[in-house]
Image (cartoon, rainbow, N blue to C red; front, side):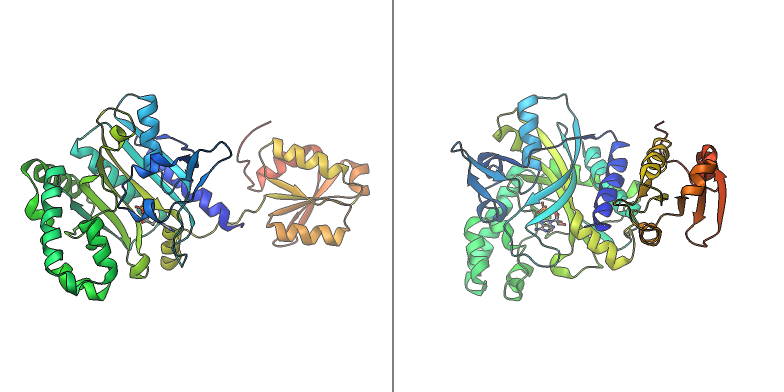
Length: 410
Ligand code: AMP
């Protein structure tokens, strides 16, 4: 609803400004795809197994509403093979059948970027910096960047094996949910927030002890770059991301202004294999998705990036027959002022009420006397001061009292 909806748009505008200055182009992935596209995200992920809105369409195709947008970006890359590195940004809603609660919804918006086709650690630095910089531009100061490396595929596999052994040894101490997760994906057990699982998680092997040389060098270079750009971060050994394809750099932005169960405002990392799975060549990828709804909750908690009003500059009041309001508001809009008016032949009183409600700075009032004299009354709505000016001078006059046309479309 307005005015909140305008805030959503402004959010996306700030985001696009930040990422477009770094060479990212806008991509608009479809709202739904063949379900196979999303299944490639990994059969062990809740997003895929439990939370997809999938259905058969009238042509008998099994499709799903997008639960996220990385898979669609990779599908588009595999299909169209653009030159690399391919740097894109997106913004829009996703759908997940989750247990709805504050900060967790079944339709929620994300903004994000993806870079396909380079393994250079400096792109990791760029991607992470852009997320960080965006939060800063919104005015948020209580966002912590958590960073980790999941290693290369072999490192990760050795780690997963070690974790599986560790958690299987402790299986009887784990919650039922964690036991089920263990069978599907031992890494995800580390995500459990249940008190019962804490001891087993605390004693689990650490990922950093399994990193091979290549992954270690890559991670060190990422850390070095972030330090150079003065992005503070915390290395969090327990940070694993849900998708099966994540490797090397993973990160999450956490708002300390939000309750801990829903405090992740965004996250991302490197992934390989997704483009290949979707029919393209082997391609490195990295990106992030930031939750718009949740980031706005963090903004509220910090008292920054509030709703701005949707008010117009001028409200035209016509107490003759509405034709003057039609002509004047059209003329003002052509000159770049935002202008609104009343309809349905309302009384002067009712039109002035509407003018106040509109938040306009001035009302331009036309009655029979003004029409005969070729003038109009300009009334400041904050002070009720008013002047009579020739209608031909209206645009210049509004400019002279500080109302600036936003766009000159005349
Ligand atoms: P993910 O795509 O799961 O990595 O999530 C990235 C970000 O999107 C999270 O950090 C949240 O801020 C946001 N997010 C994910 N799921 C939801 C949801 N159901 N409702 C609101 N925000 C969400």
